[in-house]
Length: 154
Image 1 (cartoon, rainbow, N blue to C red):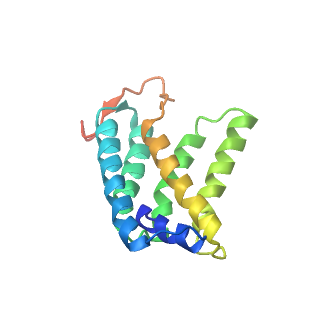
Image 2: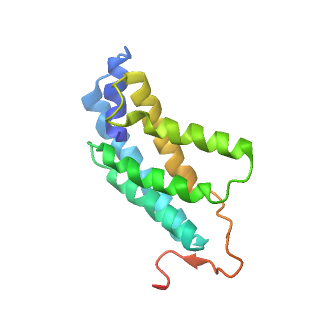
């Protein structure tokens, strides 16, 4: 699931590239993106639900920095998606949420291995993580006050 593995998947799908050359380059680029996402997340002011989802996404981003991203890393974004579900009110919202959750689950060890499904799931995971970190998190509780990451131990 780690970006380091994308060149290996592309090679197995017939793209002529050397994965051991491109894997570290993908990982380095991913590190730069991960640092940018961490800075963006650190500057956000969110309620507790938003903070929990952003932290789950950031922990997953950090875990995917290594060359081997184990399947249990899917737990973080899927739990963050459950926090998104708290604000869904329309059929369209539930439909989009369901498509994203199912796409993230394509890399589950319970499903048969398909290189195309694995590549799509890997790219969807990266997009979902960035979206979870950068999205607008509306406060659902009238009395909740936004906090910056690291402020207060409430």
